[in-house]
Length: 228
Image 1: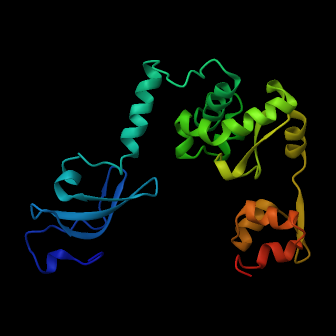
Image 2 (image 1 turned 90 degrees about the horizontal axis):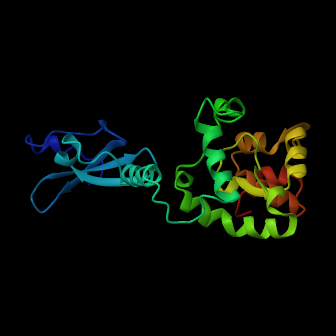
Image 3 (image 1 turned 45 degrees about the vertical axis):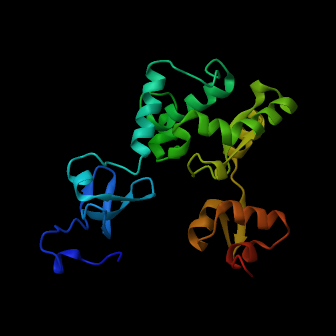
């Protein structure tokens, strides 16, 4: 039973609840395996749930839900130049590398405006193939209309992180315009940015903006429930 303390009934089982092993935080007991070894429910730093045994945790064999091994494998591929996507010489690949650099490498030009402000790249996009799967089709469409050199990645919420729901392709002129002036919405006699609306009214930025675009009033878009 999840969350039950096994130590009260079985003194041989040492409770692991609340302990941290690598990226895994133990949150509850999950019973035993076929070898009668205690199993534990763990929450990984990436958000995934993972069940593993006491031995796997205490021996260091389980340090994450599997995301750590995937990241290490991706890093090894990059270091050994075993690139299989054949995109390393493209502008699209350069956009991805620049995005990672300005958010994570303090010596990179522009870091203070991105990583220095707490802007991050979602964990999924640390693997180039994932970024390519999410963003490359629309990149090609935009480049066909405006040209590759005039195709730049843009965040809908300028204070938000880089992830699929918060990114789009824009021309350089449109992106500069977005940076100069953030659109404001009148709610309760206050002018708020979409990011402020999201924080104060606990609503997704994309959901709010799409409601406004469909003709909802700013107050209705911010306050009305999804099912309303």
